[in-house]
Each structure stands twice: as structure tokens, then as C-alpha cells.
Length: 219
Image 1 (tube, rainbow, N blue to C red):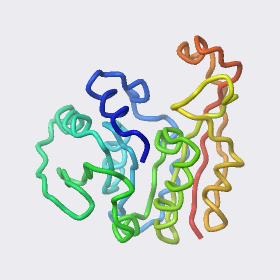
Image 2 (cartoon, helix red, strand yellow; image 1 turned 30 degrees about the vertical axis):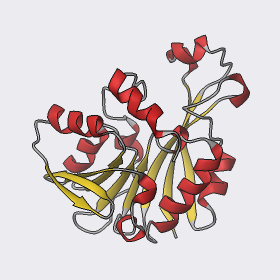
Image 3 (cartoon, rainbow, N blue to C red; image 1 turned 90 degrees about the vertical axis):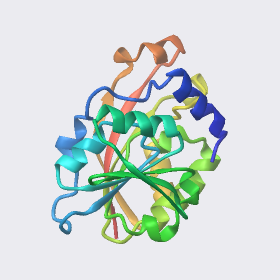
Image 4 (cartoon, rainbow, N blue to C red; image 1 turned 120 degrees about the horizontal axis):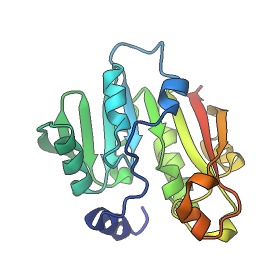
């Protein structure tokens, strides 16, 4: 992936500004996962300790998260008062409790057949965490191996990239379409100006900052 030590250091130092203290409100509004098989499985790449994983379980999904940081995984289970079991697999170390499994390891080491077992994907802070060259590889590996009929929700940021270096990176809608390719239908469902609510970006001199949500469906 990228220089993984950067992310591990951020977790150790508590510099996790991407972590949200509430479930993302767009899930209730836009999650397109209805009508799938009983107890479907959703992939949450680069999941951290996202509260959104609990939302999916509460709505009948089984969660497969992938996270590099063992500390993030430990904190997730502790904060939800869960005691996971752990086992070594070809994908990485799998920590599991109830309907949540989190693979500790490199997302690019997760096998295609494991990705193909997921009927949904939730990409809130994964794609925008990656620089351009890695985004291409990420899309090919993850979205290329998810099965036909897979549905999902993606949340991205758009801002003038020249005004700030990522992460998080600006990933315009046209790039999302190019990365996903013809196999995926993506439909923009909301675009919101959030600059007034993001002092960190304001201090960086950003002139425009938009949060963009789109639903996904694989043909």
C-alpha cells in the first residue's frame, strides 16, 4: 500500500481525525442494501474502529472489516464490550465477535475469493486515504473482485488538490467513474459544502471543500 508506518504512527499517537464519533447519517438515508440475501456480508476496507460497522450489524449485515492497525481493532472491540477470538488465515489475522470479523493486515493481501464473498461495500474513508497511483491498484483489487450484484455506498471529498497535500485526498467524481470502470454504476446522491465545519482545512488555505456521497451497484 502506501507507507504504512504513517498510519500506524497516527493510531499510536491518537491522530485519527478521520474517525467519527457518531454513525454516518447518510447510512440511514442512502444505504442501498435492501433486497439482498439473508444475512449478507459487507466489506468495510480500511475500517479503523468505525462506529458504522455496528450500524450494519444492527441492520442484519455481517461485517468484514480490513484494518492495518492492531490498536484500532483492539479499541473497536473494547469500546463495544466485545471479546473477539483470533485466528491466522491466508488473508491475515482475523479477529471475530458475533457478526463482525476484522482482518488485521494489508488490504492487498486479502484474497480475491474473500472479497468475492461480500455482497456489499462501504467506502467512507478508504479511497480518499490513498494517493493516485495506489488508488488505481486499490480499485482493481477491491472493486474488481467484488461480485456482480454487489451494492454499496462511497463517501469522497472534493477540493482543489493543489491547495493542500493529502491525505485525505480529493477524488473527483470523474476519477471515481474511471477507477470503478464500466462494471459499476455509481449514482451521486448528495453533495454538501462542509468547509465552514472543517477548521483544519480552513487553516490549510482550502478555498472549497465538498463531501460527496454516491451509491454503487455492480452489473
